[in-house]
Length: 303
Image 1 (cartoon, rainbow, N blue to C red):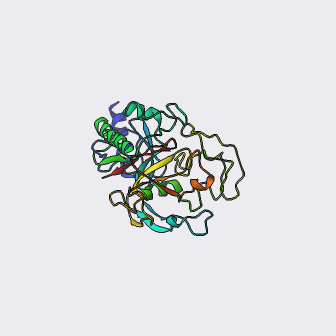
Image 2: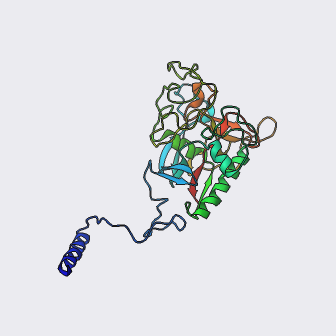
Image 3: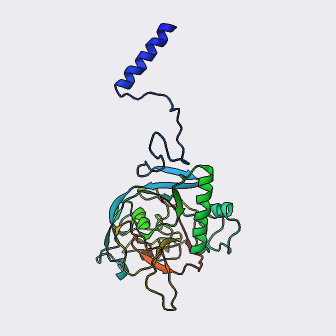
């Protein structure tokens, strides 16, 4: 027995010296609260498509990278406020795999500010919430994530910037949508009888659907096109921001006709024509208002 143990110990040492993998568990389990596992952060050291979950909210990893934001003038239905700019995102982030659901809202916040007229159920996206209420949801989820240890202390939830949103929506594509230059209501929830750029017509549901019912993009994100519009963190500016990590969340842009200012919403909705679901399409919306076709998606970022 002693000889056997000596032999196994020698074999283990030889295996380590040769760099082979050894099938045993580390004695130092990873801790999201401290962000350390042998000197690295398991919440940050990820690859595209990796999935995490914090307080019941599923997230997908979007890596650092460069992309061209906006649309070329040759793209059908191109708008002046989509003039292209080059963007570099120096840090990766975790984006919600789905739009925030009514079930998640009830669990963290409680009752809805208004009824959910576009479809009611725990798996339906929450709508009729303001930008301000969506940000409050993010702050509460951050606190709960820190408390449970599922979210590192130097990370927080918030609404995505426009650049983060479009980068994740495109998932490496340069076409009008992440599915190509044409698409139907089999790929997204919108008015399929008003398709985009010669796509075949298809039925319209005229309501929201539970999240995740349509195909994900290449990074595993569902409903980036259609279902409900999604708030972004940035104030609306006519010119898209470019450069490194653009963030217009604190600098107001052009005022509306009544003197108010608007945040940005992205992605199109169940009651929209196909042209409004393009990756580059953007609209303004005042942060205190609500609608039956506007919800939100969250992002986890390192401070």
